[in-house]
Length: 104
Image 1 (cartoon, helix red, strand yellow):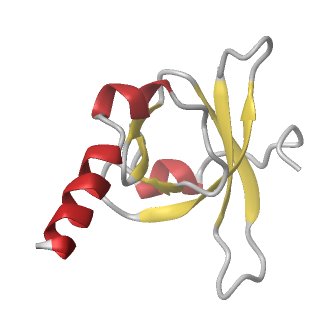
Image 2: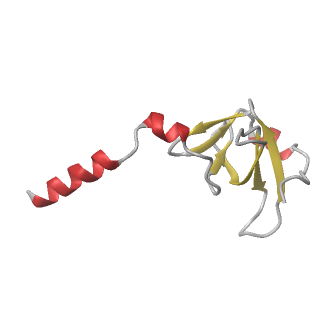
């Protein structure tokens, strides 16, 4: 009985979907392509005055080595809690993105 009460309280304390959408962009969220491949993790957001106009992520590394920083502008991605960021680009599109100097 006590365990189920604790579990119920823990579930009630979880944020709802609307509340999760209003949270700031946490760094480290996984970035997925439209074809479902994980291509990196958010390392920075772009924008001014609290408005996010783009995201930067590190992609193309193998075992933490190599890779490059790229960015995508607003409209090319959506927040998909709790999974991360869903791009409107395929893996091939991401591979063709130029390296960004704004992301380091």
